[in-house]
Length: 238
Image (cartoon, rainbow, N blue to C red):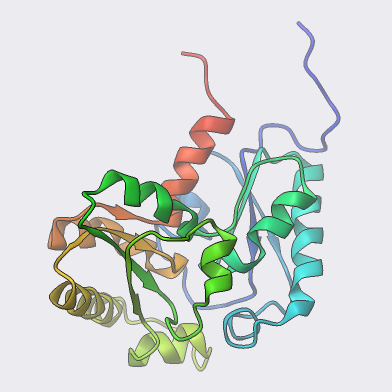
């Protein structure tokens, strides 16, 4: 049997381009490797803060993001994702720069989830900052005419202070759950035709099981997408 070489580290399934942030990443988060049953390699882009990506849309970040993807590919990962859903803005450019599958945002699931639903239903999309979400982000991951309802977390006090602005690195998880649940409840009150929810923000993935039980809807997030892609690029022979 011949085993093909040419990579530095063998057995790596997933590579993650990581923003630089220091608040907690609880179980379920893409930056909590214990959440997955396959190996993950992280590449942190120094200076790539949430504010630079979401608030400023700093074009200078694209080059180091591409370099990070290329480094992960050289190390041997079979697919690449990112630690923030707003990387949707750079999906096409990063995918063009490497030869392994790339899915930079949970938002890439929206067209698929839309096809799961009735024609009169919508996909609920929960994002870190709905004010910063643009047509460029949506088009970057192939969202065109899908019926969606977008809700943002930017007006939630703790979420804004800790995750969006980095004023502190500590999280009250009970308060976090309360803030997120209130945003989703308001969205559903306004749009009861929402038939499924996509969590854009990777920092919400921890709560996906709780949200599914509470609201009785399918909940899609980056971590569940990562598991699906991992199963496709690294299939195991039974």
